[in-house]
Amino acid sequence: MMTKMSAFSNAKIALGLSLVGLFVQGCRPSDNLHEGFDLDLTDQIAIQSTNDTLDIAKAYLDTEFQWTSTHVNLNDGVVGDSLVTGCGNWNFVTNPSFMVEIWFPDAFVEDGVYHFSGAAGSNDFQILIKRDLSFGPTLISGYQVTENSIQNEEIVARGFTLSNSGQPHDVAHASIQIENIRGPESSIRFVLELANEECIQGSFQGVFEPFSRIEVEGDCD
Image (cartoon, rainbow, N blue to C red; front, top):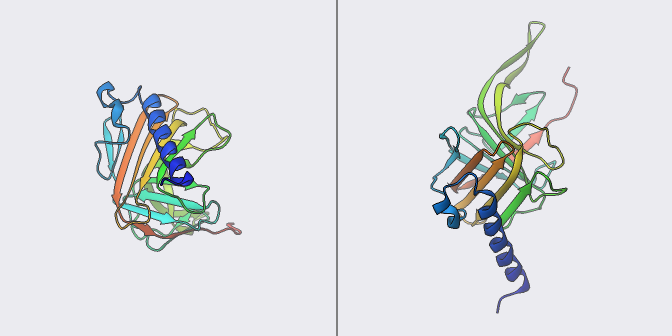
């Protein structure tokens, strides 16, 4: 017998797939609309207008993030068991060239489909994608104050609730599908439509490595 919870989950997934079909019509070939999250990508992010792809090497999952409940970090660097940021300094083991950060308000993310709308007052998640990252020391008055801060970055997509900046990279609509989140082989797929009608798709399948993201507060002078 199907429980009320499983029935609700199945209904949510069905609704999610139908919504994805609605908003990706402008950024996917028409003969692929029925496929939903069946993306032709393997551990990659694809930017439709430029045909650029970014290879995802690592996926990290922090279920005790200090500002929200769950934080997912996809990148092509190495984080280690913790990512500490403070005063512009980052302690990556290997610096990435891009990052996808996804914040969920839930204490632990279940398998299913999640949605974002730039016009909504609340959302299932928030997302930020950055590329062309470069790192180096920060100098003030000739003195080095950080060893490994981000020097340059390009914002590819930015979706925060009630924080529309009027920029082309603002996320208008987005959906994420997560499968086997508690299993040894998990997957995450996402489709984003930006304010400029750009379409970004991503897919990763593998191990979501545990880590802790720690933001240090203090006097940075």
